[in-house]
Image 1 (cartoon, helix red, strand yellow):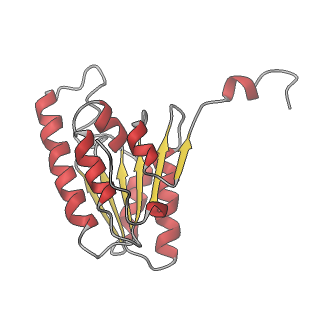
Image 2 (spheres, one colour; image 1 turned 90 degrees about the vertical axis):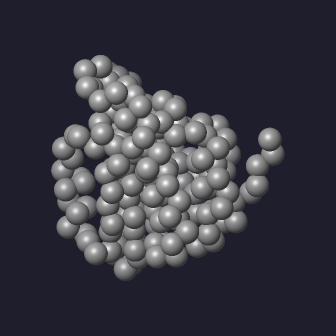
Image 3 (tube, one colour; image 1 turned 180 degrees about the vertical axis):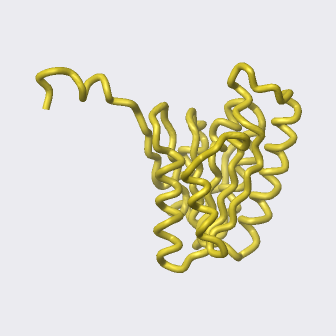
Length: 176
């Protein structure tokens, strides 16, 4: 299936990889946008039951930042008591919310936090996400975070940043 090129490819950023800092980087983009008086929407697809100081801080940025926790925790972690079908139902609500926010004309930056994981875990379907990217209005910045970004998502982005842990190489004696 051949994809339609997004109207404004320059507005799509993917933050992926096994290292830490994907959500933090996206939140830094939100902070910068607020500094320019831009409207921001953040939709978390997972992590809904985990405390995060970053997210608590972002809530103080209202009304310029609208924040939605759609997830019910990380469904791939053992011990999460929420059944898969409930995780998927929440993620499906989040994808509909994302579609509405993307096409609302209200926001200049939308962050879809952990959406890459949601694709990998089949909580949302790849075609649903590609449709969001392919119909993104010009002028809207869209940031997608999470491990294991799908290659088709990365193809549609103007920037893909892969976070990786380099601690072992940096902490070895004799390295500088």
